[in-house]
Image (cartoon, rainbow, N blue to C red; front, side, top):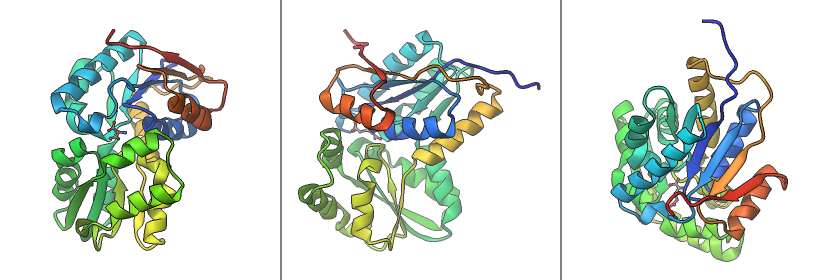
Length: 271
Ligand code: DGL
């Protein structure tokens, strides 16, 4: 099939700033693509909500992306990926591919490690879904996946409260838990956590690999766009950022990842 150029944007969403780690990797791997980011700060943290509530937030955001003429949607949130991928796929139909952050990471880990124990830190909702254990152990039954809910880390990151002694002590207190003992690798199973990767890696002193899914997801998205023949060959229009409630920490984080000139607007889809 001759390749055409598709300038339509890619919708990317999370409950807050976490998905910016994925958006940033997407903009590096796919510099020709325009992103429309939605941070659902009104409903943050998703990790504490019921699956039904998260699905209804995801539906609202999916409808917004349809109205924005998005050609693909990246669920840049493990919690929403765990409980709302099916809802989103159904809503967007096969015409708009949906990429979640869990499958590319689970596939990578299942292929990379032969046997042993893999740790995952994530929100309560992601841990309750057991999604990483199900996906990885199904692909590679010789691996054992152990998941730990680390809810305090989301609010810490969202507040910009990290890289200090207290945040390191909180991180250490979680990582010391017995079910994370003797792991070969630790998956950062929440898109907020790449922002504290340095502190997590510091705890392991380089002896345990810490896996950040943002690049894997960006490469996977590129492959999906290529397969569907919807890559943009031309120059990308400027990214747009929306939040359901504009917060100072979101504004600051957007500037850190994308520079000061970004267009950031408040848009409460539930008003
Ligand atoms: N960043 C999200 C995740 O990857 C969710 C954090 C939250 O809202 O609880 O799970």
